[in-house]
Image (cartoon, rainbow, N blue to C red; front, side, top):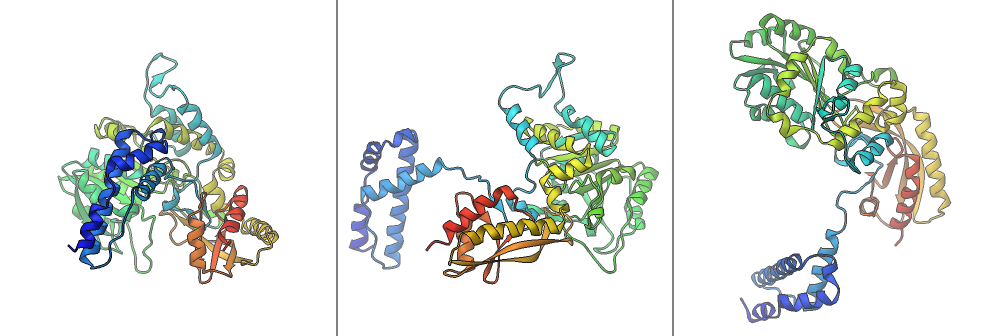
Length: 471
């Protein structure tokens, strides 16, 4: 290490010196002394490492004084008071955008969360009997009424639901699954990995594109604990394909007294094909085919909070409820409150389509979306800015969330072509707003897709573009 680097290390401010400066800035109103001291040490250590690296690269080391270092520490501590989890405006046209939190909750769900979280609740207290109750009972009757299931249980997400069911029904035994259904869901979670953690042994049958009922039958042995069907909700195999029907699997399961499970994934409760979308099997119709247990998500097509819903035969559900893993995977009172409010809408399907934002976005006529695009376009034109050119264009939106992967929904966008910067730079600026606007870039334009932007968000979009287009 040369003399300049040694000198740079010696010039690093002392911790007590930095803390004295911060004390004068009233730093202890933001954080306790121990946290401030730890932050000072971390900052100084990072500066020390920079100086050492500079020596190795033979570049002149930077010199840091106490005031500059105190600025860094203060910035870090102030940043701790800023929320990391933020509301954003989804202008991508992907309705169930996994990275953006999937389905927005309805107003009733938000109200119920506030009411239940603000005080005490009867989470596990039976008000009629005056004794301990069961938390799942708050949504059980609703789920039975809507789906036709014999019994129901809710855990914290669908991966947890799948894990709990397989562990209960096939721990230490084999679970038979078609090779074409060994899917990977969001976040690199794969069905075979979930199965391994459940302590069941995977028995693959058939091929990627063709699995017959005879493949399942040949695989059955004394060691078989479960026959499993997985809905390939996030992809489709087309062409030379074949798969065993649920009815055939149910008949096979009854013949050998083996439970049949269907992981339906997206949790569709309303037939969507009548609105021009591809057919997505509903929970009720799949249960009517006789499966012993079915799992699905609460926050995808269903439109509620993150949850894993388990439905099926009463004797099977009783076994699942008694599994010790159930407690580790259970949902909290806020999820229950939001799910209950969401499910109530499904007692009137038309009400659900109107009040659940994901369903409204999926089924809203393109002409309505176009009118909303024209209205936003007019608001932007009134800004009279020379920094961008605006236009309305036809587009295609996507369902997202691992649901209906081949579906494209007619939509309209407001295209923003910036004059003084690239579209990529404008996208970055929009993304870094206090209320971020997440949009997509197409060549030299930003696309604001109105399939996923509500009218009450127009003010924030206009304000955000105004700020971002400034030099």
